[in-house]
Length: 486
Image 1: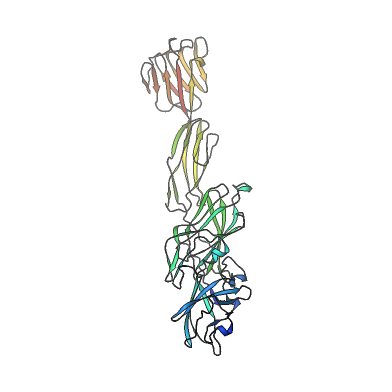
Image 2 (image 1 turned 30 degrees about the horizontal axis):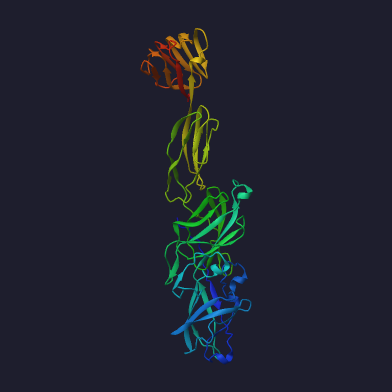
């Protein structure tokens, strides 16, 4: 989804250059440029007050006219905004009464009136200033009785400010910080007035210690936006990498402040303010009401139902998210019955006790989309011959399972003349009896002379006919698997 922030702002720079050359070295027809502080744009692009209308001492602008070679003018005073030719005795000359002047900033390798490559490192005031690309071509007539000119430079970039406005309650106080912040430009440069190249990662100018209120500023190439591209990336206080996906449409000369709330597994863009970069005036459309990313519409898990024995574990996972370009595809896992089964942040389910629990994965992007797996926890009861008691009996009980027979001989491990297995815990799904000789039979029973297994329709009572005989030769063992009745 492409997000557009409507804002119209003409950012102009009323550039003026005043030569400090000695008059006896300056030709009478040398072009002079005067200072006009009130309309100058600042090249230290991080400012938000009136100082952003000033150039810094040492800034250079290239100015050419008609067929004359460009002359570099350098700011010699930030306070007075005075300028002089950077190269001694190299001037622009009035050769006609009217000339076409061309000017650009910054004066860096590869930069011209038609071409600019965006610096990836904007981590200091000096470095970010060199990303503030401006040009102007203007027809100017020589003033009567003078040689001064004034030029209005036009910004070609957009400014992005990322402000950390808060943290989720999941963090401890010492974790409420960010680091390794990166901002992405849709293009890597400008050629003939148009964006060119691919997405570029920018190291922004940082102000603050990474906590609440810290800001990160980068100048980017304006464009129509790319919903599938990475826009902001940072590391939270736990070292996790978080991403805001989807570069919005950004307009030339505008400043965009993105207020972020950092939470575990996600970043929320709380608000966006759009201002005129030069004046600081808030522009129409400054409060973003549209979402900045693509929301999840559905989640599919690797299983919708599973059975686990108490004490065992199984890991569930998200097999797919729709749409596949959803901005935040992370989920939070939860259990509606932790007495039966718990689940950790990675989807690992631990079976606690007999019963049923719904394990749910909830999308972290605020869409409210969920997917659920029904987990059934069964109980396995193992009955050894030593659990039968002593002396001939007709029945015995262990862990909720009662074994009955016409005659039970605990000493030799014999269940004779038919009987039943019953439970009040739920339903049997499987019963395995191991003995020296298994002559028992009945509905659902199968096996051989040393082991018989029942695996019929789940029931709370299972009958057998015949005998399970240990005959004192080996231990008779009964293993019952039980699931909840409902």
